[in-house]
Image (cartoon, rainbow, N blue to C red; front, side, top):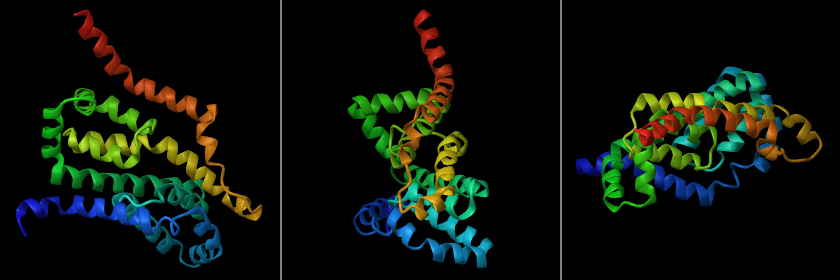
Length: 235
């Protein structure tokens, strides 16, 4: 196998699994599937708690690393099986590590090549990458705290922008904490939702009580970049 193809193989596998998962796995990684299997999952957790935690974390890691559908359901499942604590810890570690896997695969495979092509073409995407390169920490924290960009793309864009491993890892693990707390908490209350025959109200994340603190954290993380921009203009 040519070295260039070997380098790109991890990213090719991720993109292929993303496409296949969107078609074939959506029904299996859904709230209905969780509701139907809840008793079996709880029974297995009670009999093999440690193994259940390991298998859950590995499955969640695979979902994110392979960009499969179902990351939100996985977060809810973490809360359902393990409660807010340690469920949120399992969710953050698994999701963050999966994001790192996507980032490293993209950076090793096509990162520099794609970045050069985008820069040569110019346009909005080139400006976005340039801004990311100039304001790495504020931009990454903002992307994590306010997920306006899909999680999959927020793992790829920093790789294409040449962001370092440490900034990406730190902002990923810290930046996903608020959202993980909200969805893990919702998952911890699923027993009552199942008993009532309902579905979880994921719209909770769009309420002012959740959004306002997230926007506040995002504004705080972006403040250094804003100050630098005004300082350059005045100079």
